[in-house]
Image (tube, rainbow, N blue to C red; front, side, top):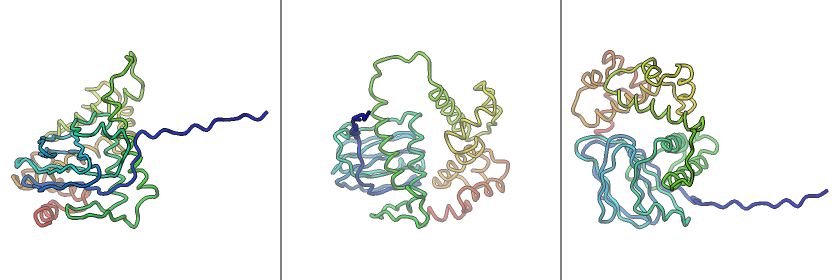
Length: 291
């Protein structure tokens, strides 16, 4: 018997047509950009520190984990607060979907469970393109970019936008028991928060396990699956990200930064810095002072 299957047409809530620019800025505390307007969307996410932005006549202070959207043809500026260096991810794109109305004048904190989407977008962007400077107007693909990288950027960005809309909608029902996935996401978020809270000190995997009351094997497994890093790798990565921010703020010398971030000694700090960034602290300081 022949069955007459019905081919369901997929409804696209958000469909991104083109990616225009991708930036990951490591700003010093005195950075200021006079502003611009353009006929496409722009998303600004603060990965570390804080910045001040203006959208037409509205002004906002964005802290770590905050996100802002600039609608097409909206004049916008961005500057550091004069006190702290900041890491800012900016991506602009063309999208005419009706659902984008949700993001007009939208400034909000990104829920912890959605930050993994932004991390993936940044990672795919770094692998696929030479990330742009302030003056660049055209994306340049890397010769060794991974297959499907551009589509992955678009797909994860669309997913992130949809999930952000969902996160602000009220649920019709109350889930009494958390799912295994939601529980693990919550645990990973707690671990990341503990690591971030201890950047200026030391925290061991054993201390994390004791606090959360789970085994080392289990927490290590779910952390690696979620972040792509071991707990130790992520801890060192976050310390070096903080070190780069302190270098840009130009308040402490390298030995003081090593001590503040609880490295055993300045030589170990320099080795870890070079292993993660491929340049020495001195080379990094020179690059940010002489762009």
